[in-house]
Length: 185
Length: 128
Image (cartoon, rainbow over all chains, first blue to last red; front, side):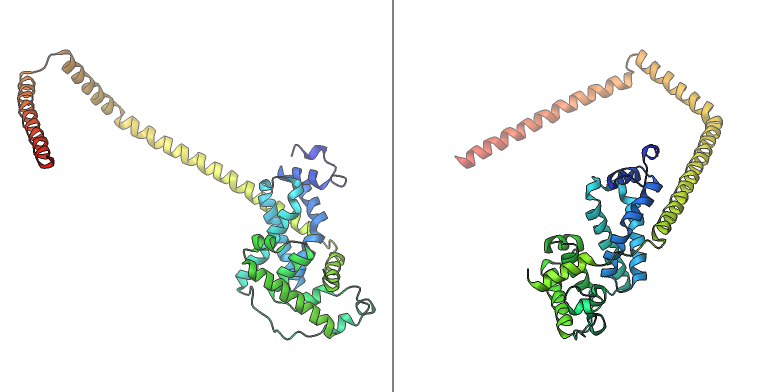
């Protein structure tokens, strides 16, 4: 708690918050959660089919992060380090449900409702969550990490433990399904 | 990168992030509860270890009180016997035993040398 006395939470940098949280400062960790919750929950909402499940997993991931924060070597590595925890939490949850990598119906339905909006019709943006929900768990995970988080196939392999060929296949098929959904709309 | 990939990346980048609807408070409360429970557990563990240490100490003390004088007396006796054995010279029995061993050892060495010499001679004959 020695760092706490010198830390104004609202103005503190993320690195300072992380260092304080590593010294078991709960208030600093609370501030860190407040700043990162949007990113973490959005990431997991893209991977999960329900917001409630994603929020539960995000909470689980933050608790794990609190427990393991001393393992983090540099504050700058926090986003990647936390992303790995979030993905592992997601994979463990799916394994518990024994649902991971089950394929869903190959017939891809068009995104009639969401692509009928003027914005989507103009091709500016797609309703990502609804489109992703139509992919299988594995495709959604790989597409999110590749297109959303900018990870290479190799990094996804390292993070998920899936074979390289499988990752490439999931990214390709997931992306193709999203494309077909939009074209059919 | 084609147009669709670019659209996909932009959609990911522009996807809305959920507002903090009490999520961070919930996580903070969970962390606080876990830390409190962990502190309580470690204190209970320390108390349990203290009680166990006292119990062991009391048991050893009781045992030492009962058997200590006997053990010390036996140790003193053994020490006195050892001191006596070292102070006096070897007994007659020990002396005769040592002589027998020396004589026997000579025989054993002679037989071993003869066998080794025979083996060497045999090998040289075979090779020659």
